[in-house]
Image (cartoon, rainbow, N blue to C red; front, side, top):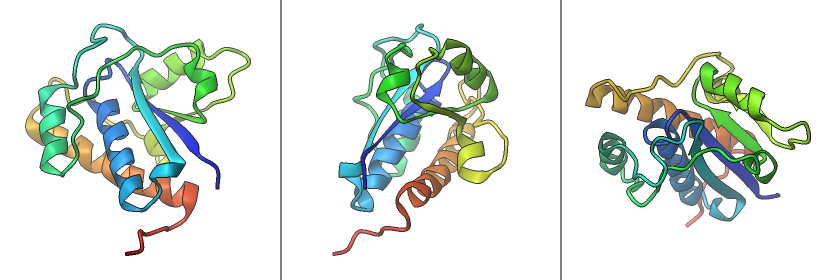
Length: 161
């Protein structure tokens, strides 16, 4: 099996996409697939470059055993379209932005995350102006989606041991 490079993209890279990155990394490691998955996250906007994820994203991740506190926000780069195999937008607005920015020689597949993993065209809602419960809901969506993503890409491999 070949290694897959996966980029999660949201607006500012402080809420949804860092959680997607952290969840996928952790779930791949739990399944013994760490060597086959490389993942990062980025934002279409650059307002938060260099900042850690939102404290509520860090908290919800930590409550599920996933530490994303060392991540730092970055803005989407043109190189991302050739460096990653799959680029997942968290919502339709960010997907439109990705499609508009993609160079003609882009080798990445661009998708709405929930559409790709569930076949249902729906956004991962931005919890930024919400409550801790909204962050928990986003975590649950991303966690379930990352499980389906790993199943789709690699089959149902479970760590032996």
